[in-house]
Amino acid sequence: MIQAKVPRISALAEPNKCDMTVSQPAVAELQSPVLLPLPDPPLRNPDELMANFQHLTISGGALHLAKHFGNPATTLLGGDLYLAPVPPGDMTGIRYPDMLIAFDVDPEAYHRRNGYVISEQGKPPDFVLEIGSPSTGRVDVQEKRDDYAALGIPEYWRFDETGRSHGTRLAGDRLVDGVYQPITIEELAEDILQGHSRVLNLDLCWEQGQLKWYDPETGRHIATYDDQVARADRAEVRADEAEAELRTEREARTALEARVRELEAQLQHRDS
Image (cartoon, rainbow, N blue to C red; front, side, top):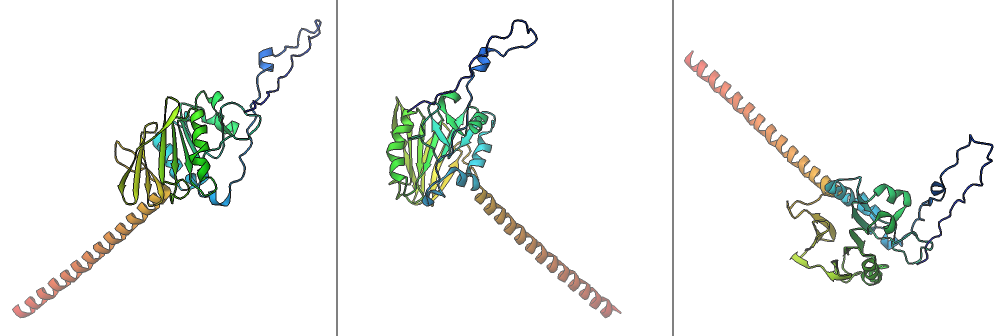
């Protein structure tokens, strides 16, 4: 990989000894590197449009994960931007994962840089996820697996809605002595696969073609927008049912009270 040459600003010429009022910047300050933003990755193929960080953000998965982890000043959830070991001069071969998660880093530096540079963040991301598509499936399983291991990323996960692009619907690898070892994936039911991420302390699940995240300590699902909409819809249905039941009870009570008054009137008429 070619390292970008960082331009240096040459020291200023020696000032006129007679002019003692002009202060000169320190040489170290003049020679500090200018961190220019990395270029945007190339546009995705049409079959990848549902397999990227933007889709994860729109669906709510990334935002709810960020809320779960907390510490926004040092916790980064990103994706669809370059991930490089050092500032690259040539973007050839530089990966841009669908999702990365890193703890104890500088998210602002990531956004300023328009990418994740390991030498500047001081560590690789803790977690990388690729979502399968026909155009990237083979690369996700082979070349990217080798590249992410070489970068020292502790966990590399792959999710495939159908299982046809990756050859499996859910897979994960954990870095052991510089080599990825497969993470155990359990089949909990016909439409549910699950594996545990140590670095996130979360269970990743393939459920009926969707990626789900669970907190193993509470057993609770980390919701997405779709989940919240469904929950709100269910709550609205329950509220409507409760209101209908209450209305029925009121009508029954009104009818009963009317019947009581009718019987009382009949008794009074008979007594008279």
